[in-house]
Image 1: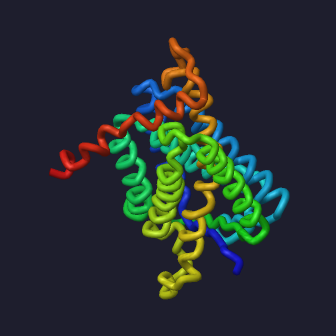
Image 2: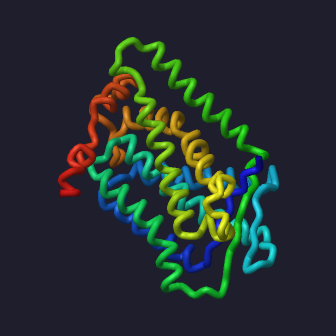
Length: 276
């Protein structure tokens, strides 16, 4: 079955989202999360290479309508640039904060999820409604490749865990799966509830086929990068702190895995205090 991932939105939605991205980066700078920012920027560039270079140029699976008319190559490039830098940056900066078990993870998570839900609602209330951008892609040409990347990545982690007898030396694979699935699911649910992903579904909105992009993307798309981003995280953080300072005592890869396993998300442990 061909899964078509489509978004329908207005230019005002883009400008609001760019403003949030500036705010998010500003908060990361304030908290001296320099490594997180670099990872987010590199992820955004990677998203653009994949989306424009592979999905559009190589497979021809990307399509754009600007107010009902076929978009130009230049328009597609810049719309994809916004999507890549916004969601690519946000997704992987958030993932980096999850893996590093940042002490303000609860606040970062609420900020991001809250924005993904609020942005389309703000657009509907305050934005002009005289221009519509529709962008979509068919996934049949590459979902198999994505599945292969995901499978290989997790096999690498399985091999690592099976070759290390001590429990504290093993990668917490369920933790990575939870992060990979929930980050994409939060994004997909926000798009769906805001009418961005589901704008053309009408009364069939709850049809299984209509929900396929949300379900399949949540299980596959961001999750496929989790093993690799974890390896990069361990390789970087064993040498440098989050503020890009060299660690006084450089750790081996195994020792950094042990250290990461011992670290706790303080705010998640005390989440009941926020809800009380």
